[in-house]
Length: 573
Image (cartoon, rainbow, N blue to C red):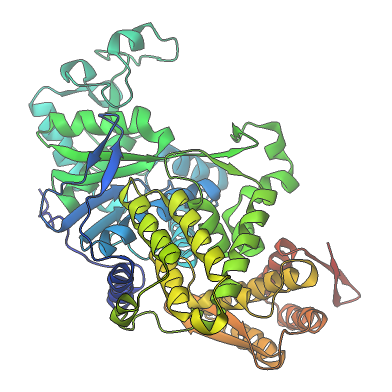
């Protein structure tokens, strides 16, 4: 088999080595500001259904695998949940002194991708590549910086063939008419994650057995090729791997046959994770020692599916799209929103809920304005040495306890707000030590970054001020897209417009942010008129993608753009 890398080996992918090193420095120094007391991290394990202490297989190192997206369509809010949650888990582990290898896969071989390719006439790999790039771009915007590996299924097919061959040799899998299947009846522990029993599955009407299967619940490890589908060679003829085998192989290749944490959405428990466990244990691997599952997004207390009739209405469905959300509310508010609820619970979603989260974040950022722009990788030992008021120290300790108790970000954020509330009672000239603690604790969660300064300076909580922040975020998004596409004339045009309006653009490894210059908040009307000029210029040179991007980003921010007689005009939606 392919040589495996040792668990815990940290090989940053997003942002490169310098960015990851800076992230580690921030987290370690921030923890020193929080506490020097040793504590044990406990996490809920979905298999044992108990909260267990983290006991890494290799002292000081944690290997973590989290199932990623199937890349066949635009990302929605559900795709953002897992990366933000487990990035925060990794951040806290790093802050507590662990070296973390965090693997987040990309499923680029799947029925959904192939069906989309057949429908559109586009090559399957081009579809997968486009939506992979989109997904990785969203992770960058959301400050998901701890992922060390993004393996793609298509890169590991030979290892999957070898893994399946091992199972066939042990009579744990067999060849049927349309592929190779895992024999669930041969694995004694099948169902231990989901709590399902094979006898119940036999009686279930949902199971439809393919011809030649030993048990109706047997699942495909290898699928024989069909006309128009991609295929790879194997001992059973050309075909492609099944969904479940992909994660077992990629995790074992990168983390070893046994590793510490396997994460994913609650909807993956069955059949995906149940089948992963079965085939990996049948292969002789101990596999994951802890299973963590994040809750799902729900709307008005109910899970939303694509079959919901309201999803056919653009005004309703667009609010679930990742691009619309990030443009409308900004990455920091979306991350903050996703972390307000303890990771294992469902997250109640909707524009009003997000708006409330954004306003709460703005209030804290305004309080942090005096210290928010400081470099984050400076030595924070001086902060540890400064004694804090009893209430501030209590909130700081409670934050640490919450994160050690199953990564309870909901309670941790509540303690940040308690700390902020108490700091407002402290005279401004004496606030700095407490503000720095508040800032550094928030940065462990990926919040309160220097790029958030714009939300904290010169903006109020209602009316044109909040709209102004959204317009500025939309224009920065246009600039980032243009830079990524090599459209530097457009990118420079956006920057020049912002500078002319008194906005300082701050480029960093985590993306671009903005802050208000000495002259105060920019003029909303002037910004929008300038944006219309940029749009007209782009369209005149035939760059309709940029023109449409400006229109769509501003539309998501609450500004309607119309074209008439060769001119672009705007109105507030």
